[in-house]
Length: 98
Length: 364
Ligand code: SF4
Ligand code: SF4
Image 1 (cartoon, chains in turn purple, yellow):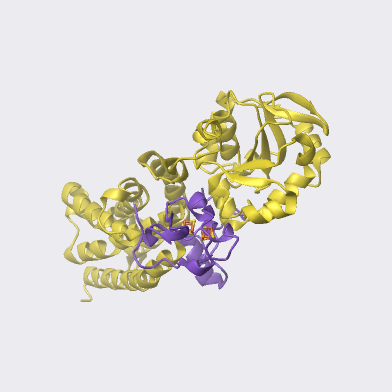
Image 2 (tube, rainbow over the protein chains, first blue to last red):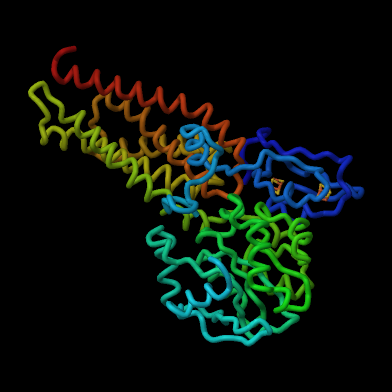
């Protein structure tokens, strides 16, 4: 299953990539592969902007607008003006979440 | 949670049934846990799933043993959410390993990683609090792959000396992963979203929709239909409002149950559009086959076709939160288009209801 096309904010900067393969390892949607000792994006539409690849690339070769793909979180952020975050954390847990 | 002593006191006070004994190590006794789940565990899982009493099912953070691990045994990291922890210990049957439980405030690995409670700082903290470097001789920990959004492997290594290996996505693959020399296949690394998973998550969608929105909706509907020039008539409210109450329930089912279950088979990628399609079909089928709904006046029928598919669409959009493949940019885009449509749809439906009422009162 794929989500909307051409909306994903993932970017790769091949000049910083050393082909270590961390991004291939952590991505839960198989977005990357290593070709000619560099990471390449196979299918950007599969990216869910979880940020795992960015946090585990020690060479700053990736960026993504990391966030939760959750309508309730985005609506909350519109109402409260903050960053989108699901309301299942900490004290005010609603149990509305995984 | 301050330190190891505190963890132990806490467990001693209220020792869970799955703690079966202790293992002596250089730093003292470590609790060992059973890889067998009992009926009590499954009962608790059910309660977790329907989101009641979740707070009671937090596992104390710290270090635990499965089997009889020693200084060379693997260290696997988990969250202190009971469902995550139990899936883990069940998958570890037959292995001798350590489990390092992070304090994620009772949230599962993936959600906690998304918010950073399952994160580098907490991992570094628990490694030092549990004095892991003295429990094992090697310097290798296995973190669930879905924890990767919160964990930075290179930063953890820098802070603790422990190398982070990302394990498979699903706990049941952990044995195969270790046996293969810490190699996960592509399949083990990929998140799927099969029918069972989608179905299991639907109570979390139906529950809030019914609790948060439906009572208000019912109140508004009964008020509108009961409203007569002489005041609110209870009988009118029930008899005229009933079809709309029923259609309300049907659109909750369409958006919160049917859409998630049939997700891959409903055309278009947008959740809002998928929910809308299901909603249109649901209204069509109900007004065709439920005789009570077949007699709606033309104005009400138009209002029904306008309002309920939009309601179903909105509810389906909420399922993005439970899905495993939607990103924030996409959800924002859906909402940007969707919210004005939802608001104008509700407004027009209300105007249609007003027209219907005015006709009923013979004003029009
Ligand atoms: S993690 Fe970074 S450096 Fe390593 S392969 Fe991926 S993009 Fe390249
Ligand atoms: S943000 Fe997540 S889903 Fe997207 S490419 Fe990176 S690891 Fe994969």
